[in-house]
Length: 184
Image 1: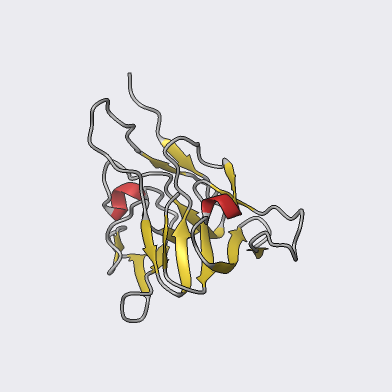
Image 2: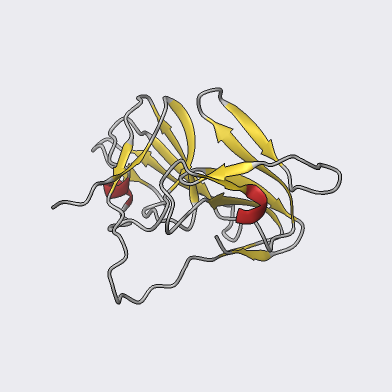
């Protein structure tokens, strides 16, 4: 029986998404299999200029310095349709060697994914739990339906009762006051 593909919902305009786990193939044109997607961006503060991009060329392929997509980054995807990405994300095989993910982040702004070994796309996780161990002061998600950023802040004594969440399959800007490792 064929394994069901993971569906990443997209809306016309910009979408800030991530993959819940690594795809079977990381080639951008296999992962981003919607012809209406014309631009894909990600931010890597460790490279000159920070931005990695791919745009649709005359042959219909996404081309540019961003040529692979995996679960270690969040991505800005621009499309003109509601067509979802359908991505082959393999399950864990019994006895296979695999480590849970971890991501090294720098002081300042980082664009991070929300990954999970057990939760489906769209499942929410308490932001304090997901970002535990990090010294963060603010994060932003992007709501493609309203085309607005949603602010998240750590729960502190100054913000009692506030519980912000992050969603598996979404991406977030997060500001760190010191470098650290994101261990979902």
